Amino acid sequence: MVKDECDIIELFVRINLRFVDRMFLIDNQSSDGTIAIIQRMQKEGLPVTLWHDNSVDYQQSLVSTNAIRKIFEEYQPEWIVPLDADEFLTENGREFRAELESIPENHCGMLQWRTFVPLSVDYASLENPLWHNFRQRAKETTQFSKVVIPAALATNSKLSPGNHHLLTADNRRIPTVPLTTTLAHVPVRSSEQIVAKSIIGSIKHQITWNRLNNEGFHKEIMAETVRNCNYRLDIQQLQELAFTYSQRPGKEVIREIDNTIHLGTKNDCIQYRELAVINIIERFDSFMQELGNALQQENAHAQIKQAVAYETRDLLAALEEKEKEIRFFRKTAIGKAISYLAGKKFLRKFSNK
Image (cartoon, rainbow, N blue to C red; front, side, top):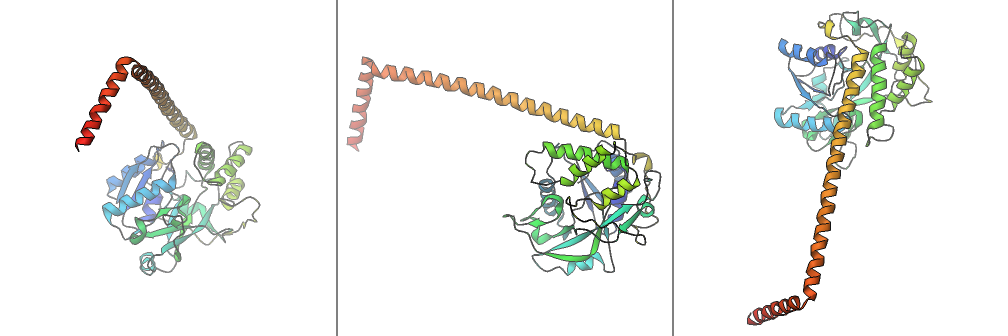
């Protein structure tokens, strides 16, 4: 699932294609250079399939679950790895594919997050920003993970919000096997990126009528921080958001960086840099247009519903009037005679049987 990820989508695709055969990207109405970057990589011949989802309040778990079933029906892969655009597969001494082959039947794999923290506010001007400007957190405060789905479980299971668990039809968690391969996670990259992500994300969660309790709570926390910082974050504030990302309030947070661990390689450079620039005004303008279109559709649906209600009311009133006429007719002499004759005919027919 991708949404306005122009600053990282190219590296997301290039790095993860070292480990998988094909990538399926579901774009949710990106307004920046995300789609253009993906299309350029497709023209390069990279095995990337682009799908579109146009919902304003899309439910990630539902969209991902439906996409996974479609992928297995059409492509029959052995495994699927659901990722967000800020997650990167990282081998740690054992080949990823070999690990997958060792997972027992009726189990799914588990990829643990390794958070990477920015070293400076400088991201957009760097050719290889992930390698140059990020280092791994020394230890996770709370260990989060993502699942890897085997073919045998793909069509009769569903993903939890955030793709953290695989569930049965009756919402029981399917057993997991921890892998040595991890997910490098880069949730906080620049002031522009996190301002747009947190503010828009918090508004979307507020208008999502059927979200789960505490789902996306971290976006509300980040949005509050962004507002308190007057919508501009320095490196200390960016690092604090990276350290506390997805952590519950009141949790004692580990704030240590391992400066020896990089992300990717020195050669992981952004080729389409002119498309990778974040324009906050453009992003907010696009979001407001989405909301406006959604409200127009909702108003149209409400008007149709009201018109149908009026038509139904008028029809019921007409039927009730006809029923009154029938009851009155039956009370008249002619009506009674017709009813009597009809009854006699029915009795003769019944007796002949």
